[in-house]
Image 1 (cartoon, rainbow, N blue to C red):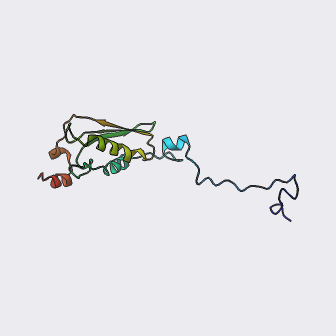
Image 2: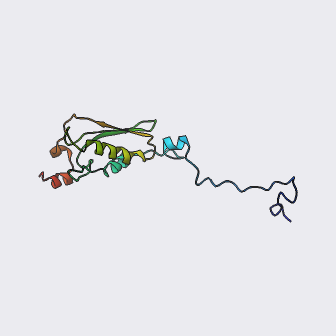
Image 3: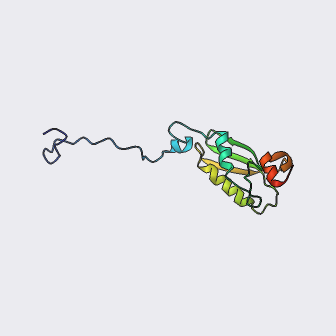
Length: 142
């Protein structure tokens, strides 16, 4: 009988060797939650804009990146992502929804521990100069 085949019932002085624990399903630690993973991945500017392009202005039907509503993004060393954006109008009735959606799509990005969506009004939004060519065509701006 090999040591592997023996059980604790056979000899109380023998403790069977346990297989190493499977860490593939390990719960993320605080450090991996903040840094985005075991290798410290951080969301790039492109990843952030890709995520924000999933948010559509419900009244216009065009995403906020192509509309030119996103003015700036920055991810600090603590994982706080700041998104400076505007709305098509200060009185936009969908403003809270757009802000909530922007927060939601960015919250899961690697290296992001918190998202701050800041509404800014300067410079005023102008689709003729800020929207992408595709958005301008959809809006009928030639």
